[in-house]
Amino acid sequence: MSESALKAEYDREGFVVVRNFLPPDELAELQANIDRYISEVVPGLPDSEAFYHDKARPETLKQLPRMGHDPYFASYLQPNRWQELAEELIGEPCTPKDPQWFNKPAGTEHPTPPHQDNFYFCFKPPNVLTMWLALDEVDAENGCLRYVPGSHKHGVRPHDQTSVLGFSQGIADYGLVEESQEVEVHASPGDVVIHHGDAIHRADANRSATRERRAFALVYQGESCQRDDDAFARYQASLQRQHTQMGLATK
Image (cartoon, rainbow, N blue to C red; front, side):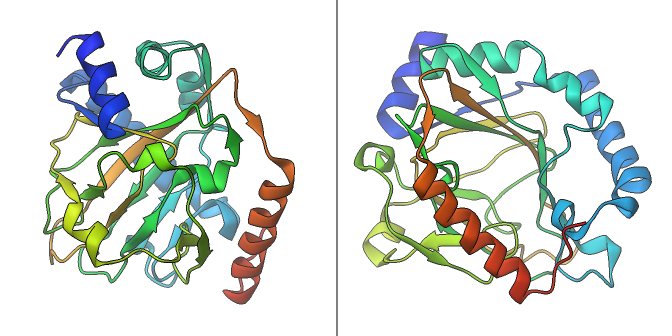
């Protein structure tokens, strides 16, 4: 698909998929460094930097929200073709936020609540997107992403605090009508799914007993974005309450 066609689909639907975005050699290098990071760096991180479904079981690691302090992952913060594509879709120069890693470990009850990323970011205008790169085969069984097409055109909805670590807020009034409109996105390793900051999306739990559902993600914000400090302070306070209730250490 041409860049102009991708841009048109992104503007219309609020999300777009680029197949084989990362070639096999780059994908293998990325996965090797994620494995190194998990084995060598994660054991020394505070609770707020490595989320587990069950911390007593290291194999249930499910999210690494900030990886940019590692030299390899810091290299992703330099201008590259990820950023070039992000700028084409956003329509202006942009900058990346910390790389992240997500997983739905096999056989764990870890659904992702319906939400909009920009509720967390609090950017106006909402010229921000997430690039979500599949590291495994992803389908309905192991918790693929599900989007409500066109939902990015209607602003940020009210969110309430959830009990899901890593996704502290979910849309308060998400209902059956929206579920009936969802599009599930299947992906193969190296495919990237890109969504607008206001696009409504969610994912079911991983129902597979053997398959992981891992992904690497980068967020890009346009140069026109300004943070709503009051809204962001409210979000941060809610996030801190959730972490306190869950007994998470931050240092």
